[in-house]
Image 1: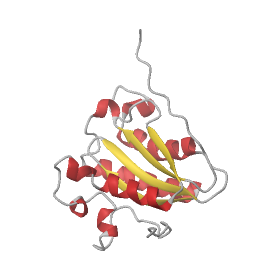
Image 2 (image 1 turned 30 degrees about the vertical axis):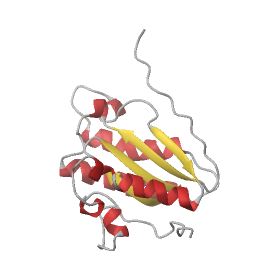
Image 3 (image 1 turned 135 degrees about the horizontal axis):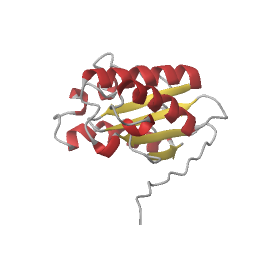
Image 4 (image 1 turned 90 degrees about the horizontal axis):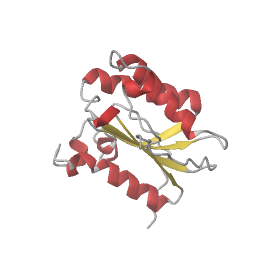
Length: 171
């Protein structure tokens, strides 16, 4: 029996946020070099403008990415958003001898979870911000330089600009 990538069912529900996770090819630490981080941030910014979505949180790990985004249009395609983010990084940083997105990103759908309740959204943001802490890469989430945790901790700007549209926490 051959390898079959996991499939991911996407629900493009109007006004839902999405928690997205996707990995580098074979979970290699391809996002460690500064030029890889820069390429990713530039790709997300370009896709955000072109496809009209807000970025509420992110964490850029050595071998995978977490994003919490919210499309601003009633009709959208999460698959299209992911393609617009991943393709430019693949072409810019793809390894010689491999073609297409498989050169940089792991094949398959990754992880996509629809979010609509403010409490669930904030729980997801907190969870992804703690990813580098759980891995022992830093002691506090806001210390990880390629994360939105510093922004929410009031430490100023972060490499990927956050949109101020995150719903407030419920009491």
